[in-house]
Length: 131
Image (cartoon, rainbow, N blue to C red; front, side, top):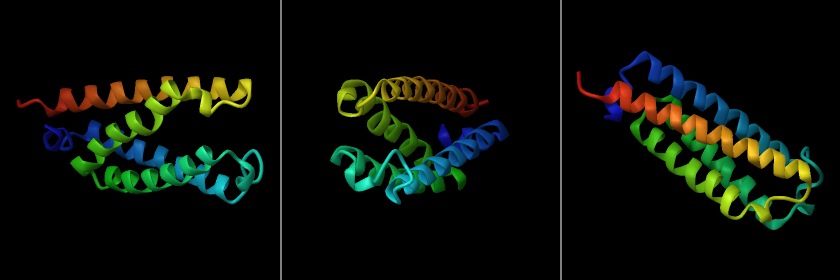
């Protein structure tokens, strides 16, 4: 189904846009690690630093998979967004909130990723069905 969906121009445009979003995210994590975030990276909570590294690796790897239009890129994107964004930022949100701004940012990210996943899954289902 994914292979068939990737033959659609609409799906290709979507996964390439998602690859660009992940590239931007990778740059944000690099900036955080280099100390251009809210403060020195070494003074951030350990969980935040771990997530910066994990999400940097995820963003680069999956972004490449999406850019190259691979089925594994789409599968890894869905699994990663659920496992690395939605679950941590909903079930364990207290570990990621230090200010009211953090809470608002997490809420926005959760809504954004739910909408993106819905669009991606809908696109794959629509264009991946056999004609």
